[in-house]
Amino acid sequence: MRFAEVLVFVCSLLAAAAATAATDGKVLFEQKCTACHTIGGGKRVGPDLQGVTERQPRDWLLQFIVAPDKLLAAKDPAALKLFEEFNRIPMPNLGLSEADAQALIEFIATAGAAARPAAPQPAAQPALPQPDLGSLQSKALAVFLAITAVIVLVFIWVGASTRAPADVNTAKAYGLRRVLFITAAVLLTALLAATLPQAPYAAGDAKADRVVYVATRQFDFVFSEEPITSAEDLGRVRRMERPEFARGELVEFRVTSLDVNHGFGLYNPQRQLIAQTQAMPGYVNRLRVRITEPGDYKVLCLEYCAAGHHLMHSGLTAK
Ligand SMILES: [Cu+2]
Image (cartoon, rainbow, N blue to C red; front, side):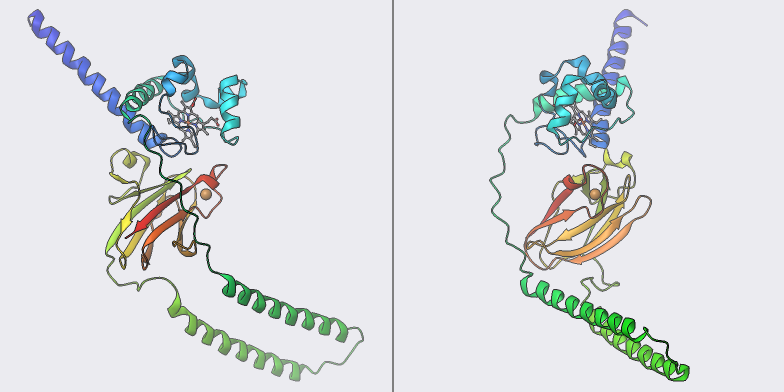
């Protein structure tokens, strides 16, 4: 090979290496960081990382990304300050190598520079309509109190009637028990038959209009039209930042978890819980919901999943 050829070859190798490093940084970021950070999109569980490469010295960043727990344990002042600012939720040690951290820092620096400066802040949210649960809640409370009163009276009666020894007519007692059992069985079956059709789940064999895959992890929800079964998929699939649905659509959510158990709870625009399922690692739970009214829906985690649980929420829009 002539010198020029060697030069071209070396340059292309370098370019390829640089390209993989760059994509690696992006993929790593998508997989490991977006649950808690954005670049230019505002705070999440952790700080917005736009401009962090100018805010913090590079070697500090490297140490922090590789082992945030060590810096915190060593009472590093910058790490301590961030920890206090971010509700004392520590950033977890993600087991990254220095090379990973370096690639991430490069990616954060370039993505941060590319992100539009001062992205327009969303306008202040109008106050939410309060869920109108008034009459429903007080009815439920009345029923609860009535049942409790009956139970208390029965206990008092039993307590009073067993003070003194008495002869028990077992045949009569068994007869009474049978009557009670049959009455309870009939009542409960009737109640079940009357309320089951009102369960807010669409008919099982109806074909869903839309399938949306939901992957949960500490502490966010990732929506996509492509299946997500592992953290690797996160770097590959196209995400939906905020899924949009048409009114009347029957949507099937396929919900899984990439780490621990979470809950997927869907709240309508009045913030009433309309459907929920568990998000479990290794399982895909299907939840079918008919979106009946337009507006802004909320998705909340319904299972305490670690210190950042209260920050784990997302949303959808129905047109
Ligand atoms: Cu949670």
